[in-house]
Image 1 (cartoon, rainbow, N blue to C red):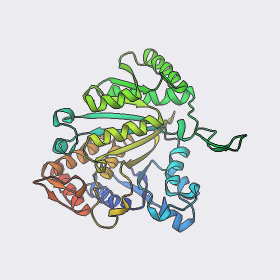
Image 2: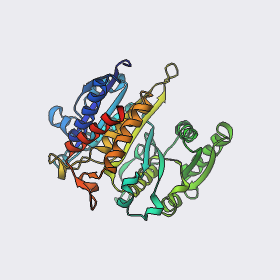
Image 3: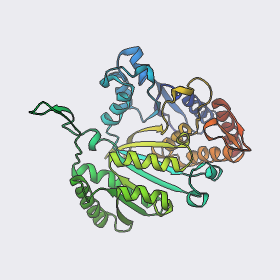
Image 4: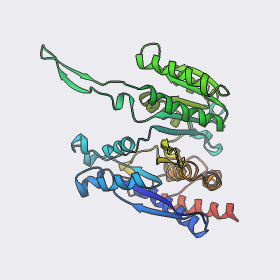
Length: 371
């Protein structure tokens, strides 16, 4: 059995604990099969942490995140925390994790499994076999730029400012991750920005062109305006392989691509930091794209597949366990092929199952795949 892999588990709020429970069952399955052993430390984040400690994440939890191999994150938020000060809102814990761990590269795969083709709002011939990776810069840009906030002008009127800001190094490092991903996939990368109207867009385009020419001449490379990219994703998504873009456009484009697959409840994500120059390891956090879904919390209706597929990404990117990651992904595909669905992806002719039942079906598929 490989050496222990240290994981910080942060279930969070809403359906977070329910879907995380299914991941813990799969971890147990791998340990039982003596395939890999996990050293798990579980803690609070988000609203659950605020209720207990008055903050959305504690310094102690952050210290654990800094020193363990990977973070598995569920979801945060809910209406009961709407009036909490902004700096202590549940989402602030997630933002602190991303910022303090310097998780600058957000990997958002948009994959249409064969069993889910009819769940997309787009025509089957448009989305069948779709497999795109959107790489979003995650720790800079307009979400973190200064100055920001409300200002009072000399005449007493108000204005609000958000600042879009990028350094050359911030752009280069996320581009390099994108090109390296492209080399392992179909060797094609699009860089999306708004160079026609934004100074940061023009700068991004210049840097991207230089990195492509000097460091990755073997990768097919294209510039694309972000608004055109949004249109092309709907018109002909198969033209894309890896799309790399800034924080704001990445937020928008990845959600658009996610819905092309049929449900946010199906999609995982990974957020990676810089490689350690000695070990090559990266700080990393893995989380489903869906939110905390407080309207179905505690009812056994949550779809655990995005959380389970995020776990598979952790196996692949943090622990270099590609075979085990493939098993989890194939097991999810098999369960869907057999017609089992949670309510969010229910289709005619299929069997609706609970969160726990979906986890049980996946464990049975893992048994079959390992036999």
